[in-house]
Length: 114
Image 1: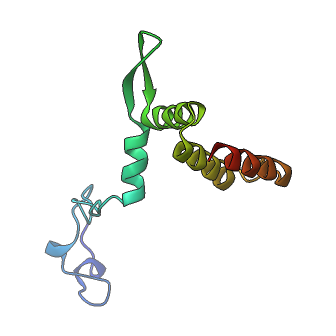
Image 2: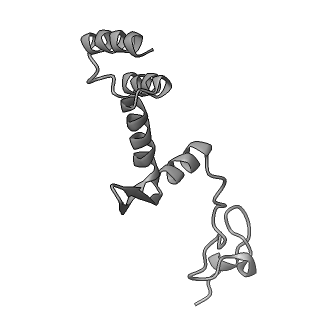
């Protein structure tokens, strides 16, 4: 079964004892995972489900949803900072549904609230 070509050593032909065994990977440990980015860490924290008491009932929602609820409740209660923050978020992340007319109305409301 051994031929002369199997015994040759040279370019792209390592000695037999240094060749990979059948079924064995060339890199058994694999590529190192690396470090998670800060944005990925924040997103994973915001996606965690946490218990929240609403209306006397305990329910679970993701942190991002709880965060959004707090902002809207604060704005509805007349907190000027929360209202400004909510409007800034809406303008930044919902720009395709945010028409210039709506922006004018929002700035008028901001001046009345502040």
